[in-house]
Image 1: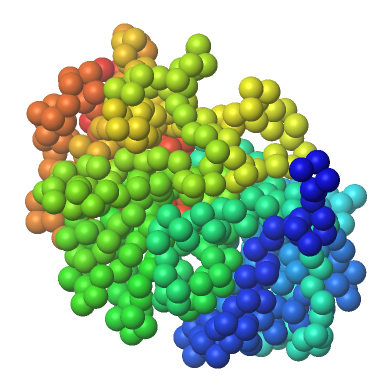
Image 2: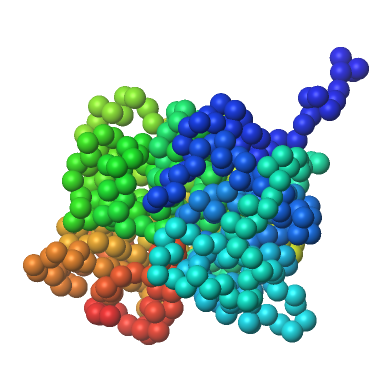
Length: 554
């Protein structure tokens, strides 16, 4: 067989961009996007993306250039996921909730050539540009005027070169989009959320995005033509790859600017939503909203981004949501571990099903290997559900590396062939993984390793608690002790005391795991995707000083 080899016909680079071409043929007359009064078909979306890619090329955007976007879940944001890489450029989606200084740093670091800006983010973008160093060239600015811009001045600031729609209109619908010369060519640049450290620029290639997109559709068992509600920000790991995935299956994208439980329930009813994604905080909001009532038809909801408390899963499923759980990172481009559900588990009581579903699960199909290893020996931990280790992965979904940061790249993409996630977990006897903490979030109290996630899971079962996060607080005697930050449900007629919450935990946890400090807050600080910013809470806990058991209100 030596004469058989790769040829142009059998070695075309994998890319998710071809999903849009196919959607225009197979689902051309079907609805692709709905946003308020705006609606497009897949043939229209295909044409608009080609026109935009054409205009980008004509403005001087070349292969490898970075094009950034600062926008929420609106039609333009969806179209840019295809149009930018179709021009050969690399898409950089920026979190709209970042401050101007951080946005400026990211734009400089990425050497962005052009920045698309949603109308409501104008002031943020202009302030970020004003902070550019004198020797740095800022990107060209393009204004996205959305159909929700009623009341916003129609005057365009002179610092914007044009509008999004003007670029679409002047583009060539017959543009021959630029296919990657290699499937290893970069397609997106995503900055990490910075929940544990400064944001880093994660670069993914066409091959990784293609495999991850197909993988995610298979593991979530997404059918053809679903109705997908965008509750997950597209700027967060490109919507876990479902931006491209919805084109692959001809889905209808229901766009919504921000999460509001009342609006979400309304859209579910109005459009017959079948699928949506969100961090566990989204599940918590849906199950605690005044609008909460059982769904007329089941809705599939995929959650990830943080370990979901079993109590939250149980409440959400009791409403008619069918929750699937997975695990991934910005560095994997989407979900790479899935809690693959077994039919026999459906016979279990709701509480037991929720406990099983709270586990992250097993590797997805295209992930080559996934393991949990002891940090000292590098060997796999015992499959006993209690031996802690670091989650490691290898497979085509893993990033190319961190932009301009070889040291950080080499620290997690090690010479032994594994990607080290920094997440701490266990493997149960049945082979399913469960995250116990980020490595930086493990609390070491009196020589005992304490999982903040386990304590949080108990706190979430308290009927008065809305949100909970546990971090380390310095202690002169124990080294560290658990400090609980909680917010309470708004409708309470009586609020529990700090001591009552401690006693509640003491009845359900080993004494060394019981929070020694309880801090009440109106709301816990979060990223735009619902991850609680534990590094912020750790700083607050440090600022409280060292002492024994103490309670506090903030």
